[in-house]
Length: 187
Image 1 (spheres, rainbow, N blue to C red):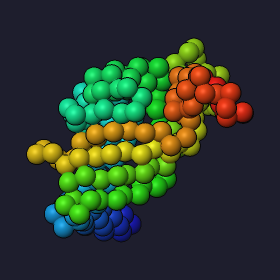
Image 2: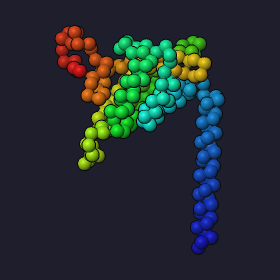
Image 3: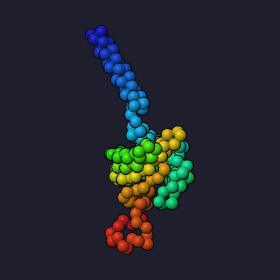
């Protein structure tokens, strides 16, 4: 009987080892032969992981020094905003639902549209239930990326719909024009 268990364990370990080798080989082949779209998808997933792990230094490396958005942010204010975002939430979970990538002809700039479900758990007190203290919604973003010497970098970020973050609405119609849009969400 112990011989059978050992043989099952041996088969299981071989299956795990072969699966790991196949997984790493697939990832290496994707990096080498996947092209720019694969590299951009990897860039997006790296950003997601860095936000979830609250790695601000790693996030700042992903932002171009030429970053400028329509909200008046430059690289330093974007990184500061990301720092405030991850410190406001005790935990952050991001589920990327879709990524649409459009490259220019030279493959040096990309326009990326991302739809993601972002859920944050506030650190205010101990939660009695799992749902208590959770904030989240599905959001749509447009990222403009530029290929620099050391890889893809974020050049611009645009919210394609109003986003509620840390009790504030971002990406909504500016205050002086709200009356023109009726029931538009307020900040």
